[in-house]
Amino acid sequence: MAHLFLLGIVYLSFISLGLPDGILGVAWPAIRADMGQPLAAVGLLTITATVAAATSAWLTGRVVARVGTGAVVAGSALMTALALLGFSVVPSFAWLVLLAVPLGLGGGAVDTSLNHFVAAHYSSRHMSWLHASWGIGATAGPAIMALALASPHGWTRGVLHIGLLQLALAAVLWSSLALWRREHARPPAEDAGHGSAAAPRAPGRLALWLAPLSFLLYVSAEMGTGLWAASILVGTRGVGAAQAGLWVSVYFGAITAGRVAVGLVANRVGNRRLVRGGVWLALLGAGLFALPGLPAALSLAGLLLMGLGCAPVFPSLMHETARRFPADLARTVIGRQMMGSYAGGSLVPAAFGLLATWAGLGAVMPVVLVLLLALLAVTTALDRLT
Image 1 (cartoon, rainbow, N blue to C red):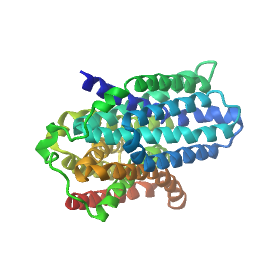
Image 2 (image 1 turned 60 degrees about the horizontal axis):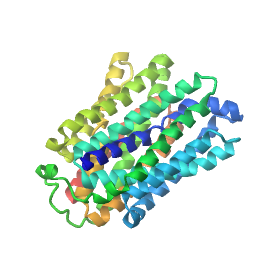
Image 3 (image 1 turned 180 degrees about the vertical axis):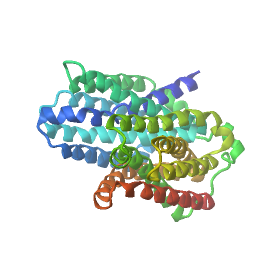
Image 4 (image 1 turned 180 degrees about the horizontal axis):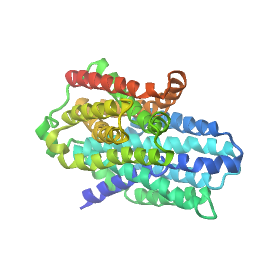
């Protein structure tokens, strides 16, 4: 019973992790109007938070080894909650940038430590559902902010409510520290059918860097498509802005729903097969979406297929890390993987903007196809080396 209760707390923590991730885009028009900032100033917030999260991901493995996962997650949730509560009362934009540092540090630590914890303690099914939980939070956060923007209190009330939810989670986490200490870091028996129970052999140096490279490539393709799909639809396909926004929601919804479904079969299929199948399906969807001149329905079908293909890739790659590498290296590699994912989610999609300015929006999806092909090559090589 305690095991299931702790699993519920882990899922809840990832829902909470996703809550702030989508609110800045929704709230930014109101924030910049209140604080007199240009449209591009949002980049300062996102870059600050991303650098902080990447730094945290790099260091979290060492901190977890000293104080344990439970203390790191509880402390990080409290840091995130206080940063969000601060967002709701700050007098100027400079304070928002300053508070983006603890927000990024806390989010990066929760992300890295929980990914390692679930990879070490639970089956691939639970890793898929863990990342589906993030999708629930990332969907709920913008909804909470939208309701706040429709109220007389505006965006500050939305941030306040999310901050209070995070504070409540921090209290639950601090009260459950004893449960975290009872867990034993060992791959679950139900994964044994895939060879996961065997102790991984010492990897070569190349594998230690191919693993984070795979996350850089995957997140670049996923987030690059999510960021630029609406612009492609409006600018080159003649789709209205509202309809394009809905279709992008379908893309992210397919990723979340796909992770829920993958969790039902993950233990039987195995991580490596799920990654290969997912990348091939994403390639099919991205290729369909990249083709110009197709009916709008086929563009939507391409986005849907790519979303479903993306669904198993991140959680399956993450879960396999604890099986590819010895326990003493897994935390370090997962930290590097999270750094790769943060770089892929921020720097590469931003570079797509420069590409679109220079070569047109039609150049974005061919680059996504190249990223996915490179991901297929990197993961194939990683499978051979580990």
